[in-house]
Length: 464
Ligand SMILES: [Zn+2]
Image (tube, rainbow, N blue to C red; front, top):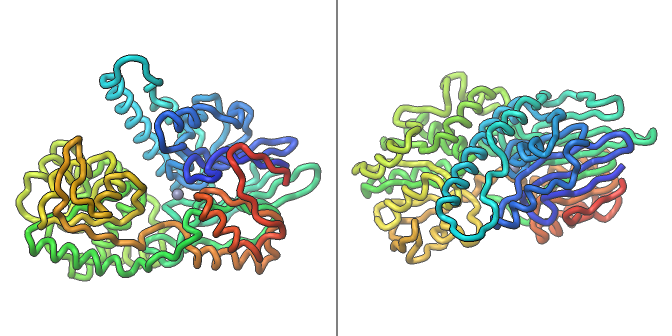
């Protein structure tokens, strides 16, 4: 049996791993490469897995870096099943339609703007390809083995990373030898709000593990609720606005859930809260349809609160005109909008109107990549460029860490312990992380895998 790493090898986007036996070809995840436009475009257009010849695709979760190129795979001729959990199918459908829409808008904009010879600005795929993907979803509930073929079985267990996320266990037979493969997908954390803890699984022959934050320890997430309450209260007392950049999938729902808890406790300051993102609204509806996949605390909340994603004073903003209208409000309010790194989306407008007023507070809750507007705000640059205009940064800036949905060192150690207790793993492959975090994870795997862990490069094939 062979495994070829076709993405997320030494980087954190484009997750895609090919498993081949003498009989079958299976793809784990089909993520979008993100980053520099031209280089990513090339990587996203060229599949190295012969899409038409694949027997199946297994999707660990709906984040773009794991699912975002499924329509591209369909466009390249793939017509087989795509296995995932029911919640992942629903979240992925929303995300992929949104991705097709944004690509079409970008292409239109660039066609108008670019003159002279330039690389292709065509979208990678369109809505018809997304439709094709959605028809091919075959959903499997958590915890049940499913026979993909007589020589291949799969089981999903909760990865605790986002709604629907799964750890993939595979049993594959080749030349009468049975092998057990465990793929972490993205591994979540213990004790974070709303999501259940990752499920620990038994060891086996092969482990493919992510490594995003294997070099750090996250702050506990309990403090965030209290900090948020304090920030909103102080900002409202000054007559200012609270601006929170947040990604539409996961972060926004968690924030709303925190605010809802504060409301239920009677301590949420009485200021309007706007979730200014049609995509967040749609994803939140998916969360509402799959509450059975959320944690015990959430189930308890449901007994007294029918909808933990809604409270008096909260409004989901749909239209662009209503969004623009928020900028003319005089009284304090809270707005949550995407994107989380402030590069695109409605948040940019809110920042434009808010950064130069010292009464306002910008709350950074997620990782801010280098050179993004979000990073510049977080580092408190005296001036920031928004829509081609330099503006002084006078607003207060608060950073709340602890909302990461990726396992940290302690989570990895805890999760690996079960592998050790059940005989460890034969071989381990470390993916989905910069090289320094992959090396850090290799250290943690010392007692887990029989062989020294491997750090595959793009396109590298291993016989297992
Ligand atoms: Zn993820």
